[in-house]
Length: 68
Image (cartoon, rainbow, N blue to C red):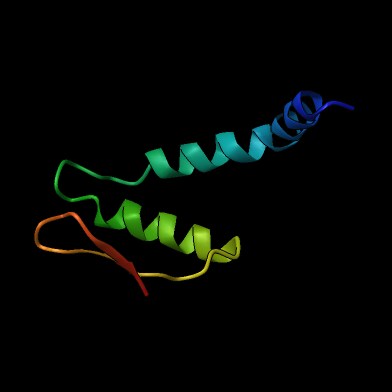
């Protein structure tokens, strides 16, 4: 099986999960500049999937960055 075929098979296997996730996200009210609830949902989902916590900082000149 080629890599392209593996990717296509994976996408097909998770299609319903992805559709449901998008539906759940879209049901969360998130007017401009008030996306906190949707952001919290995404954070919680990512953590449940095993994402590691990190903080990303920019310097005042926006030219350097740091991960913690």
